[in-house]
Image (cartoon, rainbow, N blue to C red; front, side):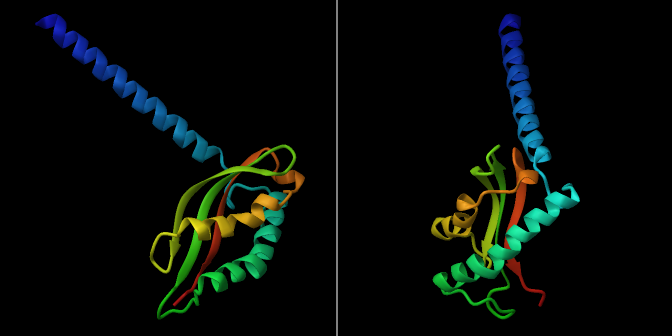
Length: 143
C-alpha cells in the first residue's frame, strides 16, 4: 500500500511541475511582447502611425460594414486586443487574440478578420520586425 501512495505522489508532483512549466512559458510569451509602454520612441512612433491610419480608414469602414454607430447610449466601445508576431521581412505571420468587445459583447470572427486584414497586407517598418507586439485596435468613448 505504501508503494501505491508513492506512485500517486510522484504523479501529482510531475503533473504539478508540468502545469507550472506551461504557465511559465505562457507568461514568458506575454512578457516578451512589446507594449506601448515598453517600446522605444522609434517603435512607438512607427506603430502609432500605422494604427492612426488604420483607425482613420479601415476601422470606420468596419463599423459601417457591421452597421455599428458608437454612442454613449448604445455602444461605448469596439476593440480587439492581440499579440501580433512580425517576421524579419515585416510581415504579420500570426496573431493571438487576447480580448475583444463590440458594444459589450464578444467580437464575431468575421469582424475580427476585417480588423486584421489591413495588418496582414502591411509591411511593418524595420523597428518592429522580428517582434511580438501587443496591439489594442479600436476605440472607446468617454461618457
